[in-house]
Length: 499
Ligand SMILES: Nc1ncnc2c1ncn2[C@@H]1O[C@H](COP(=O)(O)OP(=O)(O)OP(=O)(O)O)[C@@H](O)[C@H]1O
Ligand SMILES: [Mg+2]
Image (cartoon, rainbow, N blue to C red; front, side, top):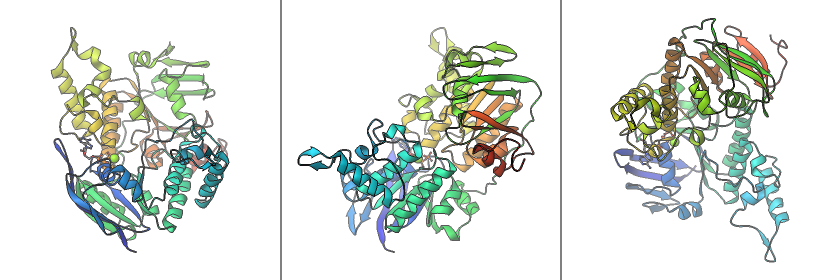
């Protein structure tokens, strides 16, 4: 193994924030190297320096024995550094092949040869061990395949170093396996992979080495077969941390929300009851209709059939605004798209949905705004130099916390959390779990959609499992196991094997 890239004493300072502080890291040819750290530790900043999106304040990088003070985006590409970000940058209405060769279309006698592009794309995919139709439109592919197309695209550009910033976040278990196979293929071809993830189990499955960062500083690097998960966490948070779920308050028998035979374009005959003080888990594979059920309750998708009752009264939810007025809040899965205005300050985002309540005549009561925001900042430990910071400048995980803060501020009676801890680090996860329990103790009810098995099992008072748009089973506390949930989620009938 030889070292392909060295980062030497890299420092990056943003106004009020030392995002990277004298970081030294080495990457070897053909290794899968994990970078882990809490939200705001500096992982994405490090990556952006490698891809040329940021210029370091200080330090040097050495690649193929040559030293650079920074890379331009073009240099980074020429040097074979490619990144796959969580926000895909493919063009949705073009085909797979057109996306892969975007900007460098294959020409035959001056004309664009679609056939040639399709053929090459098929070859590239086969090399990676995946089957994708080159002529399929990207928007018709599932998110896992979109990601694979991104990887194939990088490979076709001769990527030598491939950076993956939280690639597994939107994927289901099967899809993650498929992605890992692609990663292994790349590794066998000598590609170096930098892998960022908050799911530590993955690190042990796919990575050779792991580097840990904390508060912008490099802490240590270890071989994954020589370090325990517990040690990684201790390095990340600077203290020991157990992985426990706080005990719940236990629900009452009072029904707060009732869904009866809900049908929309995407779901079919969904009925359930939510009790006061309850955390009702929703399990299932991506695309099973869980988010769509949430959308129906929150007035995003209109009902073709069925009805919703809140506190025993029929409620025709007309719009999200109307849902909020009736005490229903939704913390969406895709928080960047639906949850935040990135150009606004952190405190403005937090109090955005309760503006009406903190106004004095026509002016915003800025003291009240600050008081509410400070409380939520500390409850959720949102890392920002000031609450006046533009939300855009927060790290990914901290932006997610701002969305959660915003919904907590509304004090809705029913809160729907769609994948509440996606992209959130181990320490902050526990804070969010704790907060959810506090809410239920206050008599609020929670619907929690989650693809993380331990979270679903550890947090829910009951679990409903969806499959292809309908409810395929319900499990009460004491009845659930990972196997049982997976069976129901993959369409096995309720009362079948293992029940
Ligand atoms: N453009 C920017 N302007 C100001 N501060 C920034 C900017 N980008 C990042 N930061 C700050 O730098 C620090 C590191 O952020 P970074 O995005 O690298 O964290 P991260 O480790 O990727 O976290 P996460 O796990 O939440 O994605 C954070 O405190 C963040 O607020
Ligand atoms: Mg990040």
